[in-house]
Amino acid sequence: MRETPASGEVTPKRRPSRRLARFVPLVVLLAILASGLLLGWQRYFTLDYLAETRSSIKTFAHEQGPLAGLLYVLGYAAAVAVAFPATWLLTLAGGFIYGMVLGGLLAAIGASIGASILFWAARTAFGDGLRQRAGGFVARAAKGFENNAFTYMLALRLAPVLPFSVVNVLPALFKVPFATYVAATLIGIIPGALVYASIGQGLEAVLVEVARSGRAVGIADLVTPGLTLGLAGLALLAVAPTVYTLIRRRNTPPDQAKQNQAK
Image (cartoon, rainbow, N blue to C red; front, side, top):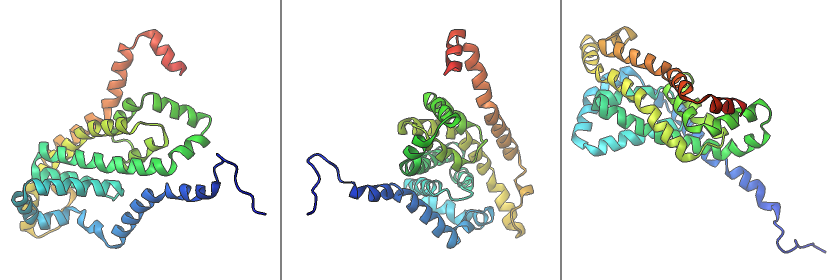
C-alpha cells in the first residue's frame, strides 16, 4: 500500500529541480559569452575596428540621438553581464563618441547595470551554498566584508587591483545587499569611466592620422597628452583607497578602532 505524506509535510520531489533552476541565469550568461566568442564578436572589440568604423559610428550617434545613447548603454550592460573581454574599449568608444563627461557617465551606467546582472546571477547560483560551507578565515573575512559592504565595495571599484569581472562576482559570495552593491558600483565606477572616456575623447586625432597612413593602430599611437593625463588619473585612483583608509583611521576614536579590530 502506498504511503501518503502527513498533513503539513513537504515532499522533497521538487527540490532537485529547484537546485538546478538557480543555475539557469548564470548558464544563460555563459552560453551568450561562449556563443559570442565562437561567432568571433571579439573582432569588434579592437582599436582597428573602431578606426575603420569611426565615421559611421559618429554619424549614427548624431542622427539617432538618445536612441543611440540607449543602445550604447544596453550594449555595454550586455557585454559586462556576460564578462566579455576588452569591455574597456567600449568606455574609450563612449568618450570618442560623446566626450569625456557624457561618454563616461553612459559607460558607468551601462557597466553598473551589467555588473548588477552578473552579481545577481552569481549570487543566485552560488552565494548561499558557499556561505553555508565557509568556515574559519573565509567566514571571518565574509563577516568583515558584510559589516562594511559599501566601504569595501567602493574601495574595490576605485582601485583597479582585481579584474573588473572578478569584482563583479566576488561580493556575490557574501551577504551584500543588492542596493548597496549597485550604489557602490555606480559611484566607484564613475571616476575610472571618466578617465578612460577622457582618453577616448583624444582618440579622434589619433584615428584620423592612422586612417590616413593606412596602417594598424599601435600602442605608440596612443601616447598622447590625453593618455598621459588618463594614466595619471588611474594612478590616483589606485592610491585613493589607501588614502581613504588612512583618513578614516585618523578620524576614528581609539575605542571604536579597538572594537573594529576585535570584530
